[in-house]
Image (tube, rainbow, N blue to C red; front, side):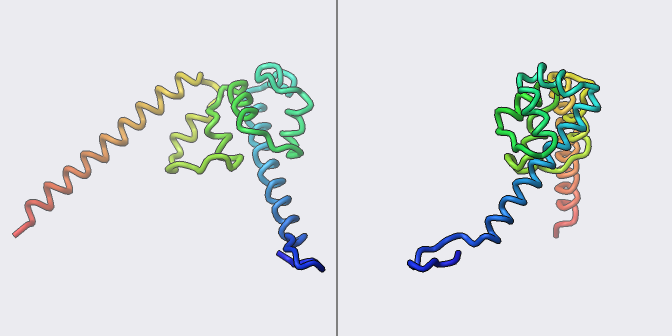
Length: 149
């Protein structure tokens, strides 16, 4: 912050410009992801706009990084694309990314399956990984017990 003539603190232009650039980068990043998902689903901008209930001009601006959509708009777009809104929220900086899993990411970004099918696959995958983790912990506990004095 920089004091003005009256001693009032003001945010410097550099900070303001940096914040604007960062918001622009996020908007561009989410826009490019939405465009990629739309193209992979083989939808035109008009088709996605109709499916999602977001206006065609606004959707176009989002894809070009000119607008940063709200969580509600991202949710509408996710439904139109048949992808998890979580992917869009993370990319837009609304949610922190969870534990990294390429399998999970691949499932939630796949436009060829429904939201319900995605959830079933994620549940099965999570069940398997948790079961394997439990077995590994049990094995370590047994081995630790055999080496105690």
